[in-house]
Image 1 (cartoon, rainbow, N blue to C red):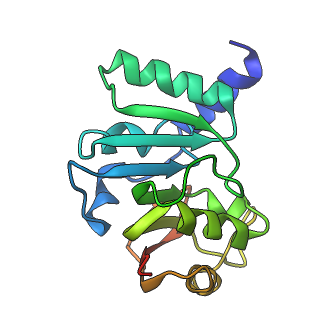
Image 2: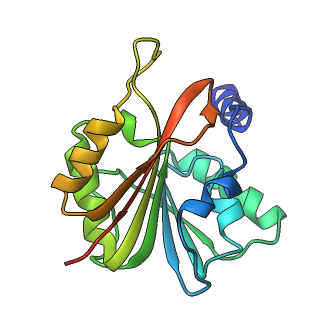
Length: 186
């Protein structure tokens, strides 16, 4: 493994964030579900959620990070995670293939955001649920951020409805978090 990849893995593994299981209370999970984890990275969502669903597709644009995730899953005896090297704006999956989609601290990087949300909507089955965890935009933000108001507007414009926003008393990387839960009803 090259030094740049080792640094990236170390940084991702050491981000200060709440245990992923605390986020799962915002979405009902069924053992039959096929779930898409957008921006899977080293498996913050994919690894723990795999025990609650039938299959996890861990999507990331970084093939080396996904290889690391595959190794980690194998070491933990997890066999229901498949990886997918893909761009959020052109998800290499068929239409209406997943029951749930989760994007954890990843959509703020995507420009234009609308293309990614359109793709998430496309790959979700009817009645599918989208869970978005993001860092709230503020004057203290240290990188690209999307405010909860703008994210909700973009999620609605993509066609989702039953859109709810939660402002839990949790922080990730010392920033306020918001959670959006939306459903596809067509």
